[in-house]
Image 1 (spheres, rainbow, N blue to C red):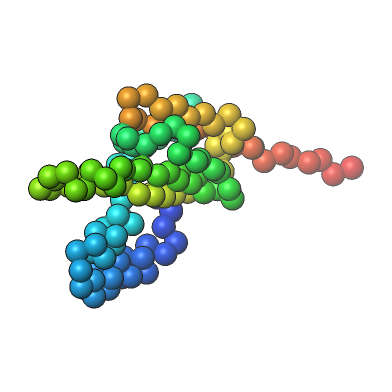
Image 2 (image 1 turned 90 degrees about the horizontal axis):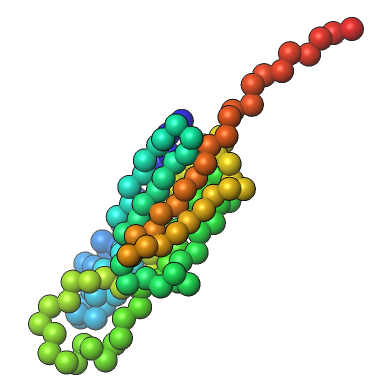
Length: 143
């Protein structure tokens, strides 16, 4: 079974962001619209015994990351903060995004939810999702 990205309102969010960009008259409003779109790059690798999800989250504190599994949806939330006083100190260009992010993925029923683990090392989040064997149908004899 495939591990896929879960976006129930993806098209609605995309439309909303485009409308906000269209009507954003000043620079700070456009900047706010872009910040809401920040999402870390994620790789998903399926191995025999587990899934390994790797996300680039440089500058995000370990304490600012929240990972939950609810009803077959793995959600990764976090926030990268910035020091706003830096803006007045001669920046000509700012490309590093900051703000909150949310990534959601649908996981198969065969994952072992009780043994999911996560680590952060050098700005890379690694979530290990172990698999368990799919329950086999049990034959019941009729007496």
